[in-house]
Image 1 (cartoon, rainbow, N blue to C red):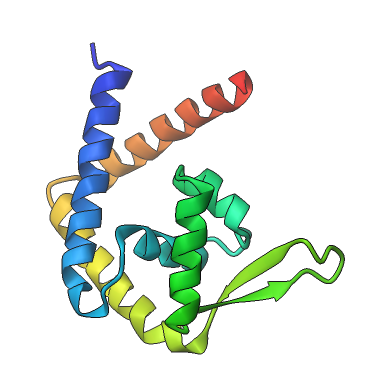
Image 2: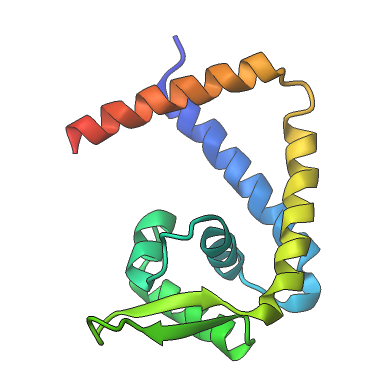
Length: 143
């Protein structure tokens, strides 16, 4: 029987592989793995726009998010905008200067996906996606 522990171990190995490969590709930019993760999340999830949301999605401390956001702002890759309705909320946005970096990230993720999923059929991917959706629904019911 395939256990959740085995699944999580494999998932963590894949996440570590992604992080290492992407970090290796961005050595010249001196990004932390968390900074790269923030750029990817902001690019791929238009509804995630605050540090609090990033903290939840990435599962890291507020301090780490704050430090990474500050660094990305100093590099000119993201900017913050104050919410019109609630001045306590600061929304994060990718800047135009970030576009070339995002293009490189997309290319690197494409290479990684090609390597990881080379021997995985479309049917197997669809089955995995269905299984993941079922697991997600179970977790959501329990929360």
